Every structure is written in structure tokens, then in C-alpha cells.
Image (cartoon, rainbow over all chains, first blue to last red; front, top):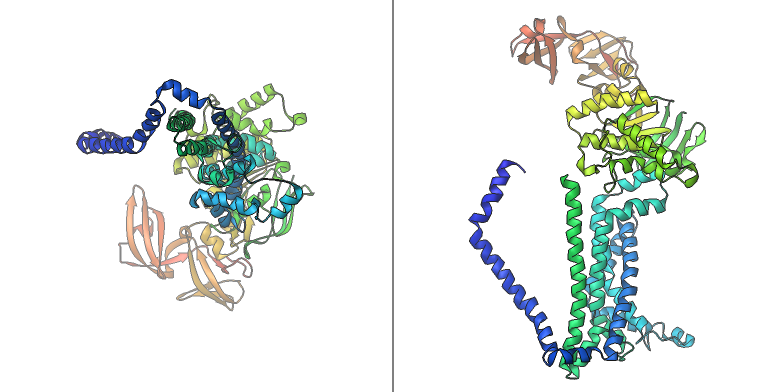
Length: 287
Length: 349
């Protein structure tokens, strides 16, 4: 930074302090209204009849079954999409082929269509009168209204997150490092492990966390394919709705709080990694 | 250890980037591929490295079919224009990479690798930089690390793709001298791609001039200067005049000027270097545009047949006495009568 820009950046906050304060105040007010207030309502409502009641409603076996299913779904969908996202990003940024634009549009599709549609397509494929129904019936297989359908719907909805994080980064980095490794005698597996993966590791983690948060919270697509069988095909978001519809407000809000805590954990992890990522980059650039 | 390139053609979407190119890189020589952008020089280099494949033709290394080998098997060191250093690895790890990824049987021991890295750091004059990351190095330092990384695998062939392209002029000059030294120390056969004629002429034993995917001329720098094969080569290798001319009955004629020439009858270009022009009673008609003195040298700009030409002369030369606006006749002590492309005409002097 030159002396000139230093002076400018030192002068700017003082001149703009009034406008700055106003803007920050507005942003905080907005966040309080839109994010903090609803979040605190969840906690307040959950604890309305005391901590004991909240804990009691959380210890219902149905809640535990829903939490287990949510975590299981996430544990399957997230790694699969991490692998797919990495493969797709690699394909799109390292090769030219016919249909590349189409592939990129397809990767984005789950973001632009309603999650309800993402659920409905599975019904159309595997439902009682779906495309594969005759074959499934003959084999005695049931996919709709089972955890399998929930996992499939979740995978579809969270499909874009990892790829979308990786594609711009890999485009910007280019393939020269990989080609250099190739001429130095590295096998493809070594190039992937020692060059490609380390270069995208933070973006990959970030994408995985986003996909993870979305997988845990998905309602629309899962709702269509789940069948809402308590203890079997109910995920946490679906269970919140069921409890609420049964006027069990404490139970509904306590379960919602549990879900919020899971999401917050992901966010905390994300912020922590972002922080480390920034340090990592800055340390290399600065020294 | 010669690399034989036979009738290589490479087309992208029907457009030929390389058109029937044949070339031999001799053992231990420093060869430069020189040409304007789009001449196919980088494509040719990438084919040597195995990063691109020709549509037709053969590449042989000591008689061995090079095209049948993957880039991994060729043991060819390549330095990229962007350096392509591994950004998350230290300088030492970058240099050691090619040795560390060898299969267990042929991988040197850890101590041996460390020693080799140390030797290379000394060669590139970056001792003590082993723990730095590429982002902490200057452009010239990165360039040297990229070279050390390529040399670490003891390549049979070293390929350099515009290695000084992103550096400023001063660093470029120093690195050029240093690169030539390294070449003499290591003796490794080297191919350099560049669009900078000064770089090619200063570094290379032989220079290949490429134009629109074809070889225009292959020769030593001195021979290229003395005997350019075409007006294009003459023009590409430095400042000069190319005037429309006709050859008939043993004479070359360009508007008001004629001289004996053994070039074949027909249209041709009369090619003259500014250093070969002298003020005279005979010769080409021109007008002095400006005359600038700097110390004991003067830069005289002359308009000649509608072209502007800068002549650098010692003060006291007849040309330096003339004022702007004055007419002058310039006699070429040496000239070439050349075709536009290097195929038909022979030259005369």
C-alpha cells in the first residue's frame, strides 16, 4: 500500500462515520427482525413450560428416530455429493466436450426448481404408478415412503453445492500445475492427491458444509417422498411440522431448537474454517 | 540423443496450427522456436512434451517412437509460461516433487533427494529459500525455481515456453545470461519458445523461424542475419526496409534505383538493414525527417520510399550533418533480393 492510499483509507472512516453508523444500525435492525427474533421465539416457545417439559418432549422415541434419520440421510448424501461435485468440477474445468454447457445447467437445476418438484420426480419414477413401478413390483421392492427415497431426494436437492464452490476456483487456477506434475512423472492418482486436492481443499470443505446444512434442513422434497411414518420415515423438519399440527407447541419448538442447534454447529464450523482459511492465505501472501 | 520431428501436422477445428513441420533437435544444442503469435511454436513444444498430439507425422527420440510414450514416461522437463509452481508446496518440495513421485523401486533415498534439492538451489542461486512458498518469491525467483524443478528429474530434453514473458526487461536480460550459463553447465538439450527475436538470437545455437504453422528457416543466428531466406525472416529479425522490386536481365529495380542481381526474374522484395545504408551520390532518394543527438551518437530519421527508417550513426558521419527537410541519397552497401516467403528466390549481395 502506498502512502497515498494509506492516507485515503485512514481519512475515509471519519468522513463517512455518520453514514456508516446509520447503515450498520439498519443492517443490525433488519437482522434482528428477520433472523434473531424468530430464532429467539423458537427458544422462548420451547421453554414456555419450563426446561423439564422441553427435555421431556425431546426424549420421545419419535424425536430420536427423526434425529437419527436426519443424521443418517446427511451422512449418506453429503459424502456422495462431495465426490460427485469434485468429479463434476474436474470434468467441467479440465475438459472440453459436447454438452458441457448442458451439464453445467443441470448442476444448477436443483437450485432453481422448487424442492417440491425435486421430490415429485422421485414419485414419478418410483411411485405406485411411476415409470419403474412394474419392475419394482415384480422385484418386490419398495422405494417410495422409505428412508431410501428420503436419501435420494436429499441428494438431488444438495447436488449443486460442492460443484458450485469448486468450479469458479478450479477455472481460475487452471490446469498448468497438473500438467507440470504430469511432465515431472506423477501418476494421475498422485496428481489428484498432491496437486488438485490440496489446491481446492478449503473450497471443498466449504461446499461440503453448505450441502450438509441444506441436507439436514430439507423439508419440501423430503416431505413429498417420506410418507410421514413416525419413527420410520420422519426427519427432524417433518417431525416439527407433525408436532405443530397436533398442537404440541413445546414439542414442536423443542425439536426445532434441536434442528437449529445442528445448523448452528455447522455454521460455527464454517466460520472457524473461514477464519483459518483466511489466516492460511494471508500468511503465505504476507511473509 | 536427437529429437526427430517428421512431417508433423496439427489442426484445430480444421485450421492447421502446424503444417507439415520437420525438424531435428541435435544432442546438447540450444534451439529456439521463434515466431509471431499464432505461428504454432507453442503447439510444437507441447507436442514434444506430450501435452498435445499431432494429427499426422512422427516424433522420434534416438529412434524411439516418442508419440507412443505418455508425458510421464518421456522424462522431459518443461517450464511453463505461468511457471505453474505448486502453490501449496515450499520451494524445496516443489523441486523435489519429480523425484518423490517416482515408483518405489527407482525413487532416490530421502537424503539423496535433499542433497539434490540443495545442489539445485545453489545452481539457481536461491540457497536458504527452501522453506518459502511460491507466493513469497519475485517473478524471476519463481522462474528459477520452475527451472530447478524441471532439471531435478534429469530430463533428456528441457522445454521452455516463453520463460521470460512475464518479467520486466532488466530481470529478463540477467536471467537470459544466467540461463545460457546453466545450459553450458548441464549440457541438457534445450528447446525455447519465444516471440522475442533478441532473446532467441542471444541464447540459441540455432533458431527455427515459424510462420503460420510452417518452418520458414532454420539456421544459426549469424546465418539468419547474413542469409535470410525470405523477406519475412529479414523483417522479423530486426529493423529494416522491404521495398517492392522487380528483377529483370540480371538487375534488381526499385522505382528510381537499380543494381546488378543474380536473383531470378520476376517480382521480389529489396531488403535492406539500416546499418548498411550510407550517404552517397547514387542510391535511393530520401528525406531527413529529424536528427537527434545523444552524446557521441545521433539518431537520424529518414523517409525512404514512403517508409520511415531510424539510422543510428556516430556524430561526424555525413548523415548527421543534414538538417530536417534536406534530401539525401542512400546507397545500400549490402542488400538482399528475397521473395515474401522463403522458397523461390536466392539472395545476392
